[in-house]
Image (cartoon, rainbow, N blue to C red; front, side, top):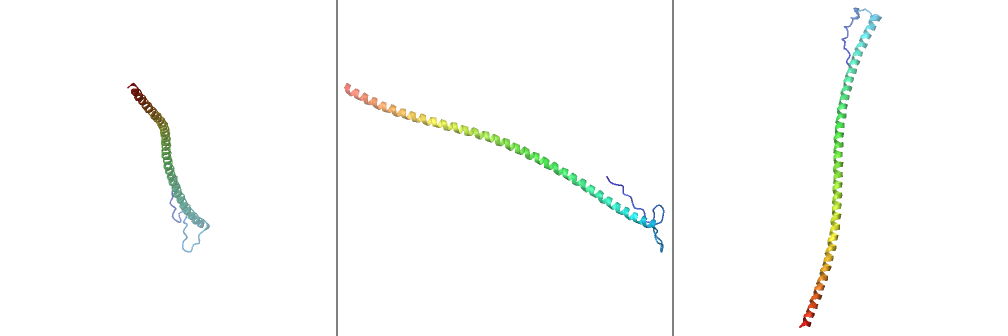
Length: 147
């Protein structure tokens, strides 16, 4: 979108009319207006160059902005993926923890059961020993009675 750059005409060459006053000549109104137009045209060309530079700067800034947005978008997508992976891992860890808690509860129940069984077996053993003692005493008493 650049405008054609035209070279300003030489001083005094507007439409073939000499605009440069000769020594002692007073410039005419047309010559003064021609000179003002030339100054204005030069100023306009400078402004056009500035506008073109600003357009280029704006285009470059827009391109940089697009690059930054793309980078931010891809970074955000990567972070969202990583977050989702962490959430999934966290859920797996929770499930594994629940399994462990359940296993510990089962082991506690089993331990309680084993302890009760052991106590019962110890009582039974004591009872059997008492019976054995009693039976031995009865046997001894019977053997002595038989003798």
